[in-house]
Image (tube, rainbow, N blue to C red; front, side):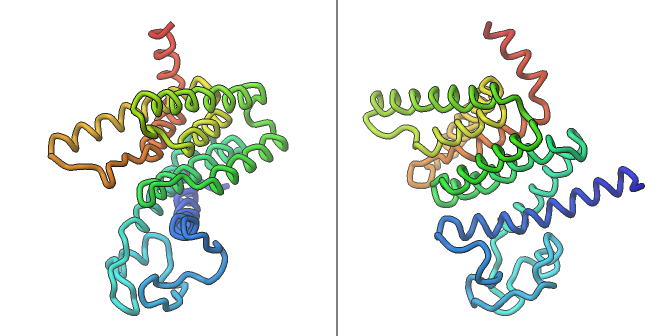
Length: 258
């Protein structure tokens, strides 16, 4: 029987491997490219990457963040995505153990990593990612009843409708699109995985974090890229907070509100 330390180390390594795949998704999905072919290659010299140059986390450190063939600098995003994925996998295992509930939450967290980084870089929330994670969640719930169906579908409906109303009202008030439909669809997916109360609270936390970020930019006299603040990264942080520490926060919040 493996000791807890070995299990945590194993969860970290598995998470790092998944993080490497998420990097492929982040790079290729916005470009409409296949996630399978061609094999990983340097985006600058297009040389196929050897397996020993593609070891999660370690290769980036050993190569000092540069391509082994052309010497071009590799974006630090690759390292941070792998590290974040590994750490979130460890945290999820620590909270839920080796269970289908762990898998259910990891599906959401992995999808949010892709969504957050794509939204930050490309200012879009890919429908392909949202649809894939929703289908995966549905199939897992059909097979193992991880999350109550009533809460899941009520969460999807309520969160989606609330954000749709917010988007429409914001567009009417500000005379321009204040929130994209990608954010509305993301809210609906979060509702399916978390239930409407937890989903709306995570989105509220995301709004607060985004506001603090915007204020900090004003203090340093800097404008957001294209005057656009990507909301997916902030919503994702809110989800992480609630998945791991949300029950007590949720209870406290609704006591104060109601």
